[in-house]
Image (cartoon, rainbow, N blue to C red; front, side, top):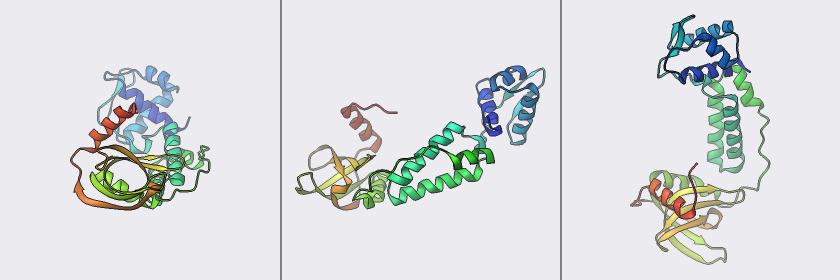
Length: 229
């Protein structure tokens, strides 16, 4: 186990207790010797952790302490790496660049041993389908979702029939081969799904739609029989 991981585990154990915990219990919980435990406690104090107590009495962590460089476990880092690599390969250019920036920012604050985990992760994303047509519109769609703005679109269905729609976008689904906008359609007066590769033209309007995005998403999930998480 890396030193950074060990310190993170110690912080997590201390957070679970509101009363002082003996050094022996902490050492057992973190799998280290008592001598190593005392050294780790001094390291955390030097990093700004408010740990009260002493040997023979017990230790307690005051609320409110965060240790940004150690806030991720090794598995959490692997999850971040895997997700970022997926976004980098499967999303549009703007999100791909954002994913690369996130990785760079995280790498800049991690201790060296955890930074090596970030750089050398063996979790890979297999090559996927080429980016679908219409993905150049995704930044505009995400902008409309964030700001709860109506979209004006020209759309062709699977049979090639064209129509003009005003929709209220509230979610964007990333599937292996296509990207799908979930929205309320004013023409149909119901929820509809629109593949981005079938959107011919798109414009973000200055009109906010009259419902909250979160409420629409919840209602849509219930209709689709989906659960959050």
